[in-house]
Image (cartoon, helix red, strand yellow):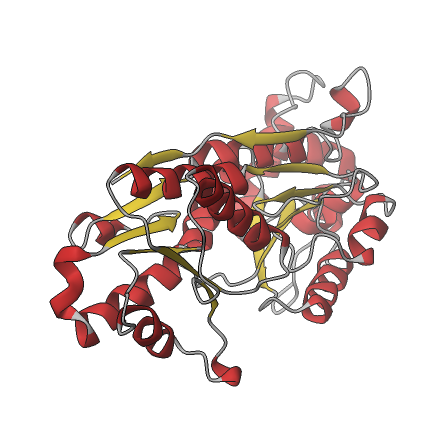
Length: 341
């Protein structure tokens, strides 16, 4: 058999036994199936001789499961999503699953393409941080028969019958803004990107609510969107906010990567204003513990989010769903953030 990939049938034929017998020995069921010690030893010796390895993919397909789940996020290089991916890998591995990844780059077309490829690879289920949770293809997913759980970005429509795991973006940004107000700031601007995306819009609403609750009239340029193609770079925005006759005394950022860029711009171009400036941010980066000005941030409970998302998906997967007395319910879980500085 030199040069040929050894199969279960080859092992069985050479030994003069059935493929079922070989399978029972390899899967540890020899004693319960009353297979003799001599036959067990013969199977084990030939398997060792040929260094035979069962085809796990073929086996799992026969069982109706590939033990693979897909994770789709906007950008796997984003520190937040990178942490989520690593946590998911660990939790999935503990249950015997592998994880494959895809980055949508905030593109619906690319997201649809990745979804199609994952389905071609027969993944058991998908965890999805969608580029647009209100896109028609999300509703299509709900009726596709493929287990899908939305996380981080949650569909606003009650018509979308998919489980969702995340945090209350609006409440989180409201809490951050209120903390800045309590610390004495009044002229608070917000810098974001992807306005029109549900998560961003919810954070903007939280900021605006906190300012309205404090009876502060916001100026027209306090809400800024980074858009390089429109000439709105972080440096341009920081200059507009901090070089004005009446500069802002605080800036909140809709995500941690924007806060990182904002800090860089402030230190390079506006160092003289650091002592009189507060910063706020949705989500946390480790560097926030070591920089000035200090950053008030809403820290997401990443481990709890991943655990909830994976367990919710797991309940819908082949083999797992059969153990449930009833089909897994469509759930929505919003975890609490921790506001800190």
